[in-house]
Length: 157
Image 1 (cartoon, rainbow, N blue to C red):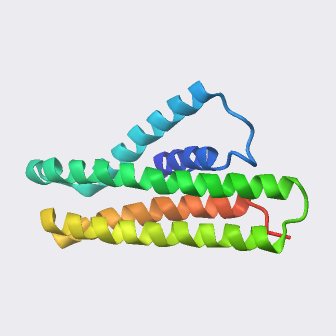
Image 2: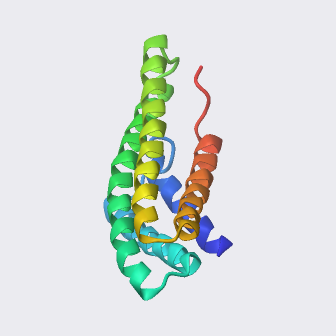
């Protein structure tokens, strides 16, 4: 499981660091994204211990969550790209730094609201322990991604 988690994180990081990472062809990126989606789903399925009835309800909620999370990830990617462009052009102005900070905080707020919303939805179809377990898994994956991002993205100067 740790190896699978590492692959998911590295792939997500590659997708989120367009301004700092080596360019990857669009075809290769799409293949990587699809593999990561499958690996992530496998990781979650292996840890949720769902009954058939729970699985039927869980996976539709999971897919909806992933779709909503993708929009947040795109916004995060755009913020990182904007920062990378500004960073690569030299000193970042106070106005640009303020704008980027607000965008980054907005992404964090949206992610928390999204998790809360989906935790409520999961709580209606799963026992609380399984709903909590799913949110724990999501938090672990997101924490690893954020750790990798923090290591790769230089500080604002």
